[in-house]
Amino acid sequence: MEYTMETLAQACAECQKCALGATRTKSVFGTGNPHADLMFVGEAPGEQEDLSGIPFVGRAGQLLDKFLYAVDIDRKDVYIANILKCRPPKNRDPLPEEEDACIGYLREQVRLIRPKVIVCLGRIAAMRLIKPDFKITKEHGTWFEKGGFAMTAVYHPAALLRDPRKKEEMLEDMKAIRQKLYETAN
Image (cartoon, rainbow, N blue to C red; front, side):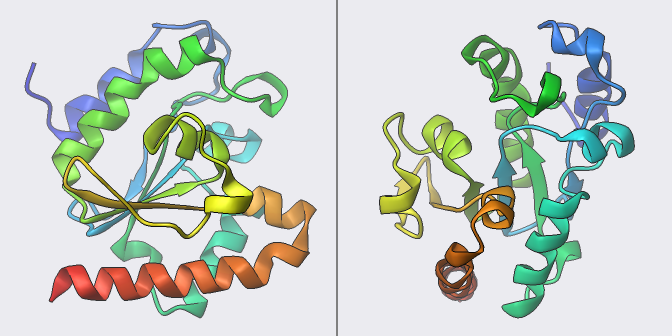
């Protein structure tokens, strides 16, 4: 089936491919500019996202907004999604079968948006999208070319809430993302 962003969002809202479909409040499809050059991908919605249906609106999302602002990237110019579209119970890590059930939606979002730069927010997204043995503490900010996309990973904002000492590294990574975005536009 050839999806549009609207029909894909509807398919996500009706999805029952895994057990999370029965426990969600709302599916959390994605938000932002559907023609964005920059796409952020997290692992799964949290409690605030499950309630609102919008990714990265809780404390971690507010911190992400501050980093975007700090490097002069407007949130309305980017697209933000997660691998999972439903919240795992108690915010546990996504199970491989849940990722497998949902990854097709993300691939379709990427196909429709065609970003130039994809940034994985955290280890789990990086392990799924960049390489299975990705080490976030060693490899954050490292650039990879995959499928015609410039890809990198940064610390998940929730990890920065737990360990603020990593915020300086995150700021440097965000500056590099801004530079990569500039390079791909010119």
